[in-house]
Image 1 (cartoon, rainbow, N blue to C red):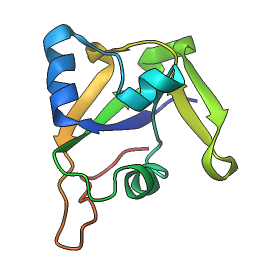
Image 2: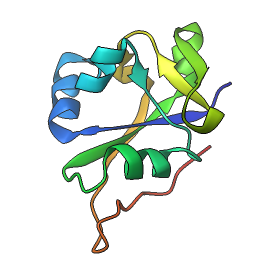
Image 3: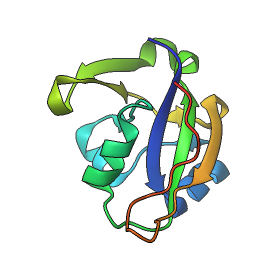
Length: 115
């Protein structure tokens, strides 16, 4: 599978990754041994389930094809296949990173997503 995949993370973690040139993952990623990603169809539910009410987040769009065989598609929530990276994320694979603000209803406001 190729295309665009998404990572939600805290702005401070993303800022540190940009300085170092790689993103090694959030605390949850480090605990689980891989970086969690979502597809465009999955990322809204990921935000609601794991980041509800969290502010100062960034949505990162990643070229899944640039990660090649390091990206695994594994069964997770609801039996869906989720992309997991068993390595650090090189900044060169990132297409863009945009703020993921909270709206007045407490839900995150997403930019336009690509599949």
